[in-house]
Structures are given as structure tokens and as C-alpha cells.
Amino acid sequence: MRKIPSIMVSQHPDNANKPYWHTEAYISDQHEVKECFYTFSKLGVSEYKWDWEGKFVDESVFERLVSTYPAFFQKYPLGKSKFLTFRLPDFRVKTEFRLGRSLMSIISASGLAKELGLYSPPMFEVILSMTESAKEMISVQVAFREMTKLKSPLYNLKNLTIKHLEIIPLFESINTIIRSDTILDDYLELHKKKFGNTPSSIRPYLARSDSALSSGIVPSVLAIKIALSRYKKFENDKGIFLFPIIGAGSLPFRGGSTPYTVKDFIKQYSGIRTMLIQSAFQYDFPFKDVVSAISQINELLPNSKVKNVKSIEEKAIIEIIKKFESFYQPTVKKIGSLIYSIARFLPDRRERLKHTGLLKYPRFLGKVKIPRAIGFTASLYSLGIPPEFIGTGRGLKICNSMEIDLINKFYPNVKNDLERAGRYLNKNVLYQLAKKTNMGDGILEDVKEVEKFLGHTFMPVTAQEKAHSIFTDEIYDRFINGSGIDITGLIEESALLRKSLG
Image 1 (cartoon, rainbow, N blue to C red):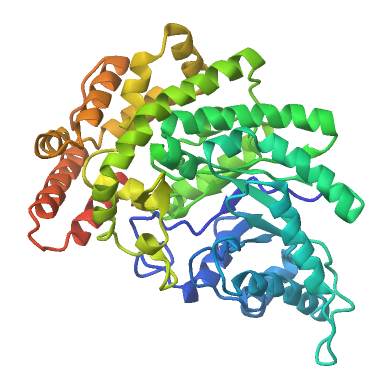
Image 2: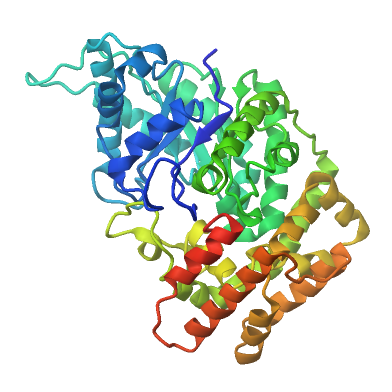
């Protein structure tokens, strides 16, 4: 059995502060090899996600790592002790050759590692974004096999150490997450037909951020709990290992994963085998606390056990999800244009492709265009309107006592998450938004109902919270009055206070 890392570091650009190894918060593609090496050497993490999705990428990453740091990778070989995992560009929405280039990079690394006498293949596994069917997974594997069979007198692929690529399916929407076990079942069947065998293990990847973006915070958590429970049954029925991955950011809406919430996070998502840590986790907290948290994750995560969701509970949870979605989605559609407008002022943190980026590579809720999860969260927090509240208060209001008990059972961090988000709520902005437009009324009701649920009202208490409220007042005032004064600096200052951009 291969080593399954407890932590995967990603390039998600949600950091407010600059990296401990860098002079600025912006990280160009030229600096990502160094970041990757520091992930392995200074943080002691075993897996790094090399992201091809919507951004520039150094295609020679393997060559640069082993040539720049040869002694380290002789001692800790890629593919055996340390793992470099590509997140593939989405071949369903792009017409260029980035998918082929990413696959050829893996093939090239295999041949070079063998020539250098290093462990080979150094890369053998990729993440497939927005997976919605088993056929998509198989199609990438077929394409990879076809590439390994290319022949020419100018190059030789006969002695490759890799012929087959393993797929990590990334499930992003609520409905896909809930039914992801059926996709995996289809995948096993298709894999057997196409390749004559079934994989001994799969690493299903559950997106905590994007599922919240599409449906709200409570549906996101509950859907993941259903998926994890189903995975355990799937393992027992099919006789293969599943090693689930969860992708989460630092703010509660995107998962609430920080160096100070490790125990609560692992308890919340018990049964997860690999935990993603993003840029804010690494760079917005003291370095010694980050290293300590990584040690804690490595110790606790492998021993966490899945919490079983009974069939009758699952049916009730699905109905709860629908209730919360019925308030969240119409509200986000109503305020979508506001969020999108604020997102234009967010600072860059990674080198995006010119034809993509935050505003040119959006998500859609129905026909309404919204930023991706980090931009969405950052925009709302910058106004003092944490998205954790959207739809949540009204959803809680219409749930009966049995449903509230189920929420508390399968989302034990719900009160802590809402408390944490409430520290950055600016009621003044929300009142103004409701008064001047029809955008804030539903969210005002959400806040009122969450306050009832928690038993107290929200107001800034600490100096940090009061300072954040002042920044969000100024951001809203400058933005809504159309003064033309750039608000990016204010957004960065507020992000530093909450220790995450979005």
C-alpha cells in the first residue's frame, strides 16, 4: 500500500499576509517551485498540489525541484516519500492544449527520473476538477495511455515507468457530493471493462468551498457527512480502500480550517484521510503555530472514524439541505451583481491566465455570474456581511426540533462557526444596503434568526473586531458612493485582521 499523506498543501490564493519566505503577498509562477520545496522541507508536509487550473504554471517543475535541491530529493524521493499532484486543467471548458501539456509533463518526469537514477515514476496521480461522471475519469486515463504509446524516431517512450494514471475525482456541487459513491461504483465497472482490473484504492476529493458557494454553509457540511458515511459502506461492499480528501479554507464559510481549529475540524469531518491546507493557513498565522498544527494533523487525522448517517437520517438531512438552499440561492442571485462589482478590487495573489482570472473565470448560480469561492467570500467579508449567514437564519427558523437536533449532531461546529463569522458582521452596512436597495432584507432576517439560535446579538468587542468594522464601513462608503477611490488597500487591511483574504 502506498503512503497516503495526511496533508496536501494547495496554491489556493486566500492569504492576506505575505509568505514567511517571500517579500510580498503576491506569488508569481516563478516562485512556486520554491514554495513547493519549503512545503516539503520546512513544513514537513508530504504532498503538494501543482495547480494547472486557470493560472500560469511552470511545466518543468520536476526538473527544477530535483536540479535545484538534489540532496533533498535523493533522501526524500518524489513518488515515494513526497508527492507532487497535478490538478488538471478542465478539458471540458478549454479548447487549448493545456491538458496534453500537463500529461506530457508527467510522462517526461517519469523518463527523466529513470535517467537520473531517481525513484520512478515521480508523479502518477492527478486531480480531475468538477468530476460529475465516471466516463470523465476514464477518458483522462485513456488519453494518458494513448500519449504513452506515441512513436517517433526523435523520441523514445518504450521504457517508461508509467503507463497508467490514477485519478482523484474532485466533487464540487452538493448533488454530486451526495451521489459521489454511485459515480465511484460506475468508475469501478468501467475501469474493469476498459483496463481489465479495478483499482485497489481511490482518493475521492470533496470540495468544502465550492459546495458552500453553490448552496450555503449548512448544506455543504451536511452533504459531506452523507458522502463520508456512504464511502464507508462502499468500502465494505466493494472491498477497496477509499481515502477521502477535503478541501477547505480558513474562514468558516470555506471550512474554518486554521492552525487553531485542528481538533474541531477533524472532529467535524471525521473519516477524512487527507486534509488540504491553503495559503491563509500557511501564511496568515505565526510560523511556529503552523508547524505545530501540521504535527497535530499528522497525529490525529489517521485515527479519526467516520460518523455513520442512518438511512432515515440521510433522508431527513436531504430535506434540510433543500430548506436552506431555498433561502440561500435566491438571495445570492439577488446580490450577485454587488459581489461581482466588489470582487474587481480584490488584490491578486497568484499569476492567473490573462483570459481567466477572478472576473473572467466565474461561477454561475443559475444564470447569475458570481466570483469563485475565494473572491465571493472576500467580497462579502470586505463589506462586513459574512456569507455564513446567508440563508442560514431563515433555514434554522423553519426547521423543526428534530431537524435542529440532526444539524447539531452532524454539524457539531455550527455554533462555533457562526460565532466566529459574527465577529466580522457590520450591521450598519447591512442596514444601509437594505435601506438603499432590496438586497439586504433577507440577510437581515438571517442575522436576527442566527442571534436567536445562539442566544445573543452580534457586535464588535475586541479592538481587532472594531477596527475591521471601521474598514468595512469605509469600503462600503467609497464603493456605494462611486467616488472612484480604489478600495484594494482597505480590503487588504481588513483581510489581515481576519487572517484570510477570503
